Length: 252
Image (cartoon, rainbow, N blue to C red; front, side, top):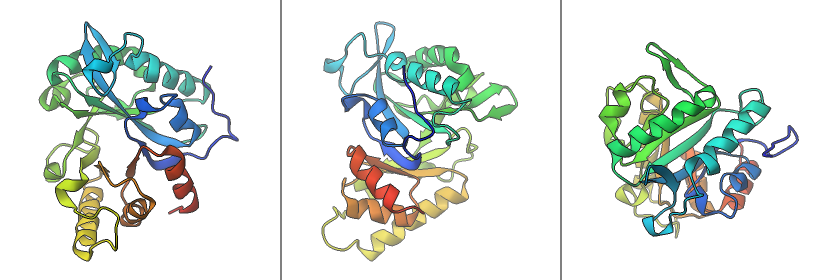
């Protein structure tokens, strides 16, 4: 049984577990630290949605349902519709590694079995917030996702999408690669020009009603600190305990 007591870890809305499935206990290790966002890479293989970074690592028992959707559903039922007792909406970022359209069609069928816990367009004209927000990254079938009814997943945008006309509930997150815009590796001071650009991206994202994330960041406390100061919403890490300790000591 999965369980999170009221005396458990404090939810950390800014903590995102990069490649969460590579930890010894996928999802559960992140939950033990209070993370409110995890990332799972999926491959459509022989009709199954299997979680792994590379095709060579696929195993039939490591399905999206077994590792993520089933335990999240169990937690939401235990905690009156939330993952953490009285906690915020939880993000399941799904990075699609196989063909975007084919994989999304299979994913949408799977997600339909979990409607009770998933935020989305459950009716044509109403967006409902529930326990878990599924956001599609990687190979994004943007046009199909945008028009699918009912829609139980949204789209991970890029910085170039900041001027998009898509509503925030369809594209609630803007993510991009750190090295595409920043050269700082955490050594020496953060260059002022880069610091200015980071804040500019964050502010523009927030004005559009979305959250902001960068991936492949230098996974160091000095970098986490700059991201936190700038208002970055999801801080990527492989160091679950390290980021949890940092965020618990640096509340906004």
